[in-house]
Image (cartoon, rainbow, N blue to C red; front, side, top):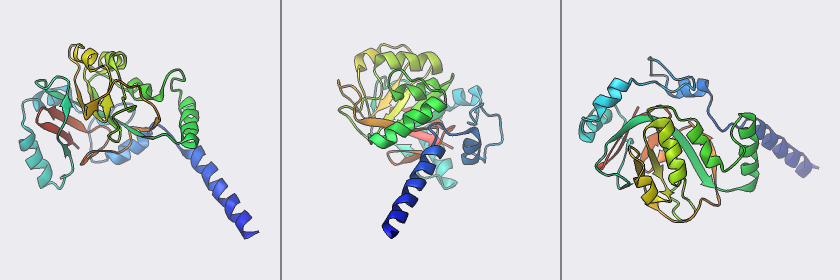
Length: 236
C-alpha cells in the first residue's frame, strides 16, 4: 500500500511539473533575472541596451571590460578557445539564450507539447525556435554541451535566417555544419567549438531565454556579448 501511495505521489508531481514547464521564459522571469537593469526593455523582458552603446563596445578591449567586471565580482563571464568563421570580425549584440541536452523521450514530448501551447512552429526541428525569437541586434547563444558529431545546431540555411532577423551571428558551445556556406553569408559570424558534416540528432532543445552555461561563463538573456578573436565576454 505504501509503495502505491508513493508511486501515485510521484506521478502527480511529474504531471504537475509537465503542466508548469515552459520552453520560453516569461517576461516576468527575465525581468527578475535582470532586475538591476532600470532602462528600456524588449517585449520579452530582456534589457534593451542602446545601439549606440553596442557600437561603442566594438572598440573596447576585452581586458578593459574584464577589469571592471571582475572588480564588481563578475568573474565567470569569459570563455576562450573558439573556432571562428570570420576571425577578423568583431561581433557585439544582445543575448538570446538556448539550452540543449541529450534527448530523453518523455521530456521531448513535454517540450514539443509546450511549444505548441506557446505557438512555436510545429514543422521542422525545435532548433529553429530560438531563431524565431531573434530581433535586430541579437546574438543567438546556445549551450550545445560541446557535442560535435550529430550536434550541429545550424547549417547555412538557418544561418541565413539568423542573419536576416538579427544582422548578427551565433555563439555555440557546440558545433555547426555547412561551415563554407556560413562563411559566405556577408556580415554573419559564428563562434563555435567545432564543425561536423552530420545533421543534428539525439539532442533536444529545453529552454529559450533562461540562464545557461557557456564553458566557464554563466550567461543570462539580455546580456551584452563582446566577441573577438581573442575570446568572448558576456557583460551583465
